[in-house]
Length: 102
Ligand SMILES: [Zn+2]
Ligand SMILES: [Zn+2]
Image (tube, rainbow, N blue to C red):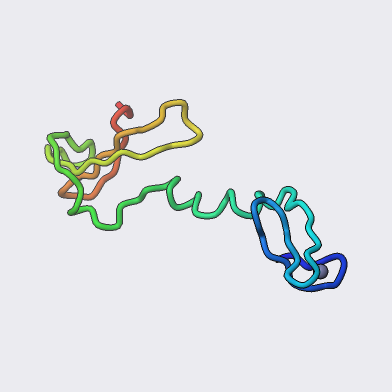
């Protein structure tokens, strides 16, 4: 939201500029990008599955209970060097572990 320096009317965003609807005064939008960058970022960072039964199943041995079936999914970890890490969730005890943990 921006208001005209000249007449105080509400300004409209137009092609990187603020344009006054009343007196046609314009000014550059500047670094308003800062408002939009972080929106929605959190959600894509951590893809926790709320419905594990929808995940694909594979043969993997649970380190907790020895069960040999587990759901798996890929998760992006920004702080790590690798782009994606495979996680397993035991179908029996719901134990969760990373593929490269052992
Ligand atoms: Zn104006
Ligand atoms: Zn288990």
